[in-house]
Length: 371
Image 1 (spheres, rainbow, N blue to C red):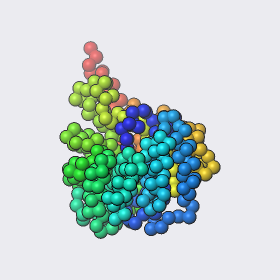
Image 2 (image 1 turned 120 degrees about the horizontal axis):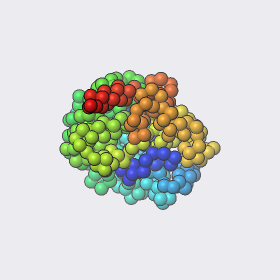
Image 3 (image 1 turned 30 degrees about the vertical axis):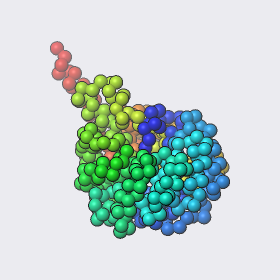
Image 4 (image 1 turned 45 degrees about the horizontal axis):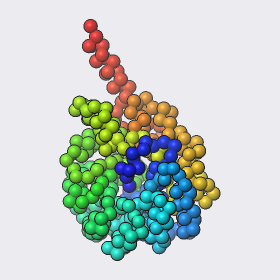
């Protein structure tokens, strides 16, 4: 889940968003599930008291990070409301990313609002029941999602809709976007598939297909009534900047662009992930554990661990990502680089932009202008 208020500060030495997988338990069987969720909770999950201790550690940060409780399905934790209340009491912003099941009742939504939840998110991977339910693995999930969305927006809770972008869903994006608008969502986040967990069974876009899709999204965003972000496709920021420059936009206009709020934020840079067993990683899609909250302060791990520090130094990135003039605001998906090559500092294969070729073109253009 993305939040404009958090994005106002660039990613760096301070964690801005903490995605916390409270449990891997979930009643769905989504084809792309990163967590490879199971029907029941695991024995090694953090206890309520351990979660409270972690929340206290997070609340000691400056600025305090925004915590997103996710899963699995966080509703499978009977102490979810207690955790939301405690995080709120400590001054943390708290959001919840539940699964759209029959457990997400009107009473539960209102209880979450009363506990202090600031936003919620739901996944919508198709514009029809046939398309969405085929991805989610449970018949009826599409209808549950629309019903849950109505309950969330009716309660006055800002709703983010998350949509998977793969070869299977790309042709449906325009219809999904129209549906997101009708739902009344405040934000639409497009997640470009990372082949981890169950996601290996789906087909990611090629780099050229992703470039075309991101260009279309950046253009369409002007007419949609909600904010739009991407997950694991930070080169969307480059695409937006390039479009604004081509349209004659000034540096100030680019700085004020909504997408600019996320400049520099990526896996390990502004973002960290806490697994259900307490392991700390740069993101849920980059499963390189640097420590465990049972034995270390998560913010200390974020600040001091060598992997996190490397992820915040884009000048160390390899290949096209290291050579790219956009590496500060983008940096590529570190999770996809690792999944593709085993090198967390490698180039993101989903990006079609070749900065070396672009540099040569600029040099040639200058030469042609010379007397």
